[in-house]
Length: 471
Image: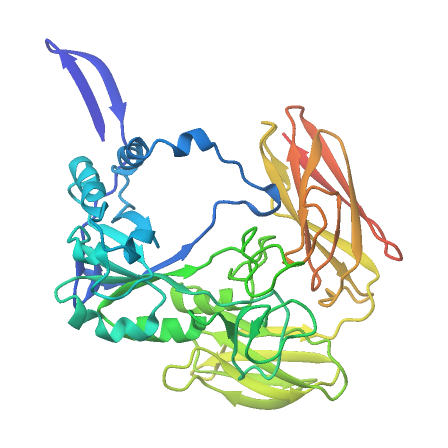
C-alpha cells in the first residue's frame, strides 16, 4: 500500500506499507475463524533470553508504562498477523478485590486500534476474577486449569475462549525415565511424588509435569476436539535461563521447552510437527544404546500413514496403529544391540522409514554449521552443532566428551551450550561437555571478509576443523 501526501496537488511525501488482506473472528462456540475457516491457534510462549547469548534489558525503558503500551500498538497495528492485544499475564490484580486497571488499559488499546479484541492471560479461572468481572476483556484466557475448560461456556456465556498458557511439561532432551506409562508429577526438590531420578533431569517421554500443568498430549487431545477452544500457547517453545523447576541448584535453567536451551528439539517437538504441519513425519525414539536385556520403551510419532512396523535386526516386532485419539504408538522391547528400523505405510505403501543404530565408542568429532556463509557485518552468527561419531560414522547418543574450541580468522566464539539445565560451565567459555551426544558453539564474524576456521579437539578423539565464510 502506497500512501502519498499532497500539498496543492504536488506529492511531497510517499510511504510504502506492506499489508495483508484477511478477515477473522472469535466465536464462543466455534473458536477462531480465519477467512471463513475454523482453525486452531497453535502457539508457544517464550522467555526473552537467547540461550548462551544471554539477554539485556534497559530498566529506564520499563518505567514508561502507558507510553510503552501506546508505542507497542502503534508499531504493530498494521501487521496482518496481529489478531488480539494482551494487557497482562498472571497479574496480581486477579487476587485483589479493588478496582481493576484493566478498563483503563483496554481503553488505551481500543483508542489506537478498535479492530482487534482485548485479552489478558489469567491463572485465576473463576468468574469472580476481578479482571473477568471488569468487562474489559473480550476474550477469556486461561493459563493452565485444564479441568475448568468444561465450565467455560457456562461460567462465561457468549465469550470466546483461548488457552493462553498450557502444559508446563518437564523434559530433558534425550533423557528417558521408564516405564514411559508412569506419570511423574514434580513441583520442587522437596516435593517429589514418584521418586527422584539419579540425576537432576526430567524424562523426555512426555510423562513428567508440574502439579498445576499436564502432559503435552493430554492438553492437545482436549483442545483438538473442543470447537469452542480457539487454540493454545505452550509453556514453552524454548528452554530459558532461570526457573529450573522442579530441581534447585545445581540446575540453572528451565525444563519446560519443547526445544532445549541450545536449540536442539526434544522428542515432543515432533508430536507437534506431526499434528500441526503438513509435512510427512515419522519420529522414533529413544536412542538404541542400552544394557543387554534392559526393557526399553519405544515411541513413534507419525502422520499421513495408517500404521508403523518396527523391526529389530530385520526381525519384525509388530505393526501398530494409533487408536481413537492416540497421538503416538509404543512398544516395550528387551534391548539387543544392532539396528532398530521403523517403517510407516499408507494403504500398504511405504511413506517414511527411520533407522537407529547402536553406536560404538567415540572416535571423531563432527561439526555442522547452520550457515556456512555469513555476512561480514560484525553481527551475523553461525550456529554449529557438535557431535561425536564411532568408527562406522554413527552419532554416539550417550556421549559426554569435553570438547574445546578455538577460532582463527575474522570471527570469534560468542557462546557454547549443550542443553543441559545442570551444566554450570560459563556459557561464554570456549569449551563444553556434550550432553546426551550434542553440543553447540556459536561463531560471530567481524567486518573483515575471509574464512573463519573453527577447530574442535577432545582427548582421545580425532580433531575436526570447519570453515565458515565471512563474506
